[in-house]
Image 1 (cartoon, one colour):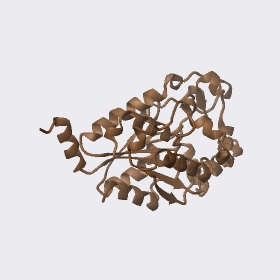
Image 2: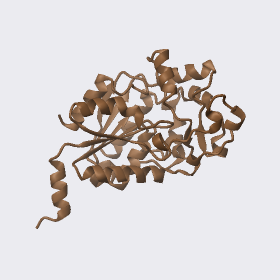
Image 3: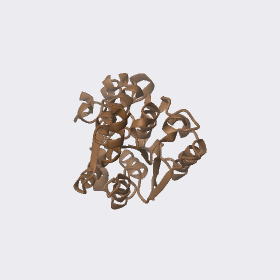
Image 4: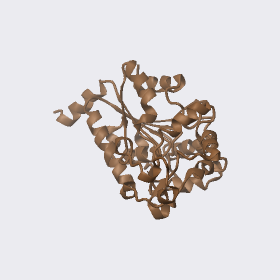
Length: 296
């Protein structure tokens, strides 16, 4: 006799999937807007999630506004200091459960969003039909993002250039606060080199105005390993961005190799795109990958 759950699972598998996109650090669902718009116009189901404290819930310190008060910006408290990886996971699990009522779910994470993808995969593997990492942290052997920052494969990362925009001590403030509105040419160039290598200067300016100043400081230290018996049984795709200077291709390859050693019967589907860390994600090559994964 078929149970209601079995019937729902069977019926869900016959419907088109929903692509659920998770943004990275100091960002929001807007990072995927070009991609989700194009996919939707092609007939695919898409939703981009704002993690807690981001997007519509973002916090902009009063001292961040012009004219800026840089001394106050270094100390003004942030509500994001109280947000944890568990809050991120709870938000995404709720979205996945709702989307699953309408068919299969493909969960996609960009950059630090990979931490949330892996944790959600550990929590509800039965509700995910695929996980996708787009130049994202996919921790397997080491416990968290911070540990991978110390590996040889990360030695060419230009993350320190982005850190030039940091205006407060994360250990004190509880958030990584970056002044994207800085007039320092070194900040502009550092962001361009690390995140947006082939963008025009006008494109970098638009990027800077899309980024949010605060990000919860605890996420890089949070346990982020995918577990073989849960996350490891979900089909996965890794999209390598070969021009990435923030998460170098060598580190991306390390993530892929570690995952494949953990789950040799579930190897990673690897795609490569010649793009920097922030895409943009409506590049035709990336759109085609997600259209293919969505099934038509």
